[in-house]
Image (tube, rainbow, N blue to C red; front, side):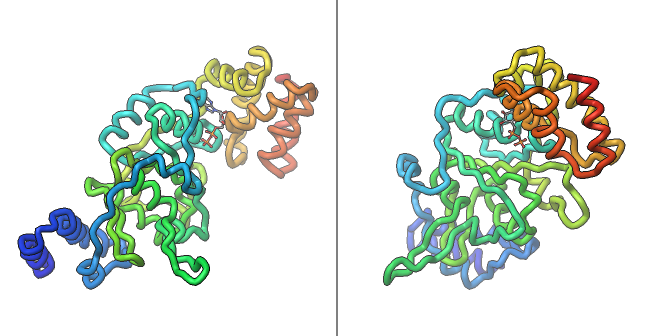
Length: 327
Ligand code: ADP
């Protein structure tokens, strides 16, 4: 370790390629945490890193797969100071964790913020099979050539996009550690396969969503990951706000939206009787849309609200009773 740092500073004086050597010194700093996280990096590859590429102009981004420039500002009704907190985090490049149950507005919030902050958004749906290469990139054969193709995380870092890892807990731990070097002040992404060290362009921000309701022993975020993020807590909005959202998004009258929200509140209480997760605002909107399109309310709730929640016959009949009593 000592040798590498001394060697680098000597090299820096001789070569005068400040950016190149600064990047390597930074990488040397990162070794201990990398080793701790069992990141697949070793001294030899560090010594052969190429200079960091310059961030490319963001207009090229529209050509990249999976990148979205969100038009206008998607409707988002705040519940607290989440917009102000997120804006400050973005200004400082702090990574953010959006924590809350499914269907409570996390994705809508990030879309709203990306549009408001005028940054492109790259969303990655995390799953068991997601590999580090799916995030950083891989060599592909194109005709007679082998070319390097950036993954979505690298694209976001290079272009200063907001990178949203949805349901991050679904990804394996050895995949999640790839994001670690992007979460501290250095904002770097080492790519072992190309020997490149990408410095995140201004505007880059890492955002993850996490639903604590899903956690179980084998699938939970490790403290070494979660303590890197500023947390914004989400929950279902107060009843009047939720009714406003349901009316806005589905097109039903305010009164119907209020009845759907009242129903949801009652059903959410069934968690104590074994319902794994209560209905999110998304389900209420789906039921509302069917009602707005002329389906009778009880049938609409049966299809869009009750069916997706459970297969348990006792819970199904308890929810059906609540529907009959509320609508
Ligand atoms: P999550 O990402 O938390 O699973 P979503 O953001 O997809 O949930 O929310 C589901 C839907 O609920 C959204 O598409 C949007 O229509 C609506 N929604 C939820 N919360 C809000 C909110 N605060 N403002 C506006 N729409 C909301």
